[in-house]
Image (tube, rainbow, N blue to C red; front, side):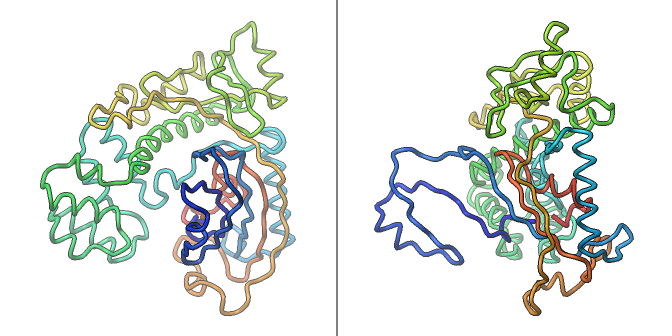
Length: 381
């Protein structure tokens, strides 16, 4: 389930005359001018995301196909179980595998090198870390880098689509051993993503530790940090409060009503941490990710310094529906489908197809909700 395979609608603000915008042509893209505005649109300014996702090849745990009625029954059973644990229409707010690199989880390790000021290791990891199920030419390129660190030689064999890696190598060709400049050849948004990915690793560990201890992620315990939940599913971290004996029942009631959310850590230089048992879990998550002594200041690229924040441990989903989907016309399936399930794959070409629709708040992952409903291997999303 990749953005590059999706049919999406995006809203943009373009600082240009309408006549120029109307002349823009992008392959496989339709552009419609909605009007004029003096306001910019930033990341996460939207109120939410609507998804329509078709799941094909539904099968049992042993790989045998299941029909539409059985597939829908299982989805509803999983939804019912989730509602009993978390309340109606809520799911664990895991940060999805795409934040880390689903089959090559290099992003947080690059971020770790960055906050340690080791830009050589950051570039080395980005270029050379192997990934699962990589194409042969990609695997050969990364192996060559690991064995030689020969920028010129690697540029001769690098696959065309590895544009970011190419940028690092070209920077090293111009300024050998200037690893900071090589790292800064990556887009600023990707540089920041490496830091966010490392923070996300701790959040997921904290969420996992909480579930392992049987501590609710929707009802606060003493020492938890709760924050007001806005109508679009975001929290207001400026109004966070620690749960104490005096406000415990009030906080629990407001969490049940959806007014407050229990939060987990996205650590940084000055981030707040829970106390009591929730705090123990969060400190253990920092230890498990080797970040208990991390200095989140990045003096050589100050904009990457992060003060940290909090994130809801559970989030709502809305307007969920599931129905049987029609089969694809013959000749319209992908090569991967024609090849059939690979080793470790969990789908069957004769299995049913389901179409699911739902809405999520900004910053949450459709892949996470789908994993709760599909229980499939990571590379199926």
